[in-house]
Image (cartoon, rainbow, N blue to C red; front, side):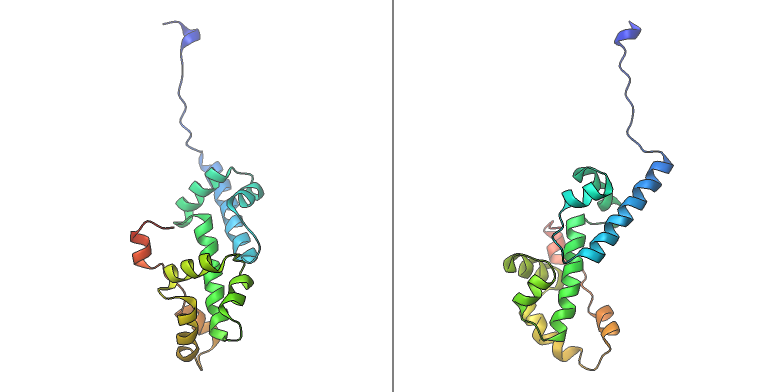
Amino acid sequence: MNPERTISYVTSRPDPEQRLRDLVRLRRVRDRIDREYARPLDVEALARGAHMSAGHLSREFRAAYGESPYSYLMTRRIERAMTLLRRGDLSVTEVCFEVGCSSLGTFSTRFTELVGMPPSAYRRQAASATAGIPACVAKQVTRPVRNQEARSRGRD
């Protein structure tokens, strides 16, 4: 066989040091989402900030945290929305925009998927259910857990 025509294949497995660097960048992305959930964020902007491609960020984020960056962002937004709805001084529409969602329909759909009931029903129910409970405890008790029905449909 001619050595000039030999093709060698290299696997794209990162070395352990590169993996640690990627995990640090992913944690920074997650921290940014936690801080800036109400701002317009998209995977491309997050990836640019982490010096990764959007596809690579999405794959690595899902591998590290079990959900896509967009899903994680929406979960943070819904958690904050739940807090605002429990307070009871804002309408569902006001809460939607306060947490960074630009579409009431998308917000309501995602809220229902994560919480298991529409935001208006949650607002009514949560106001009475958490009365007298400290906010820090109410936040832990009412934290959204992915609705199993939504998960089984493959939505994320």
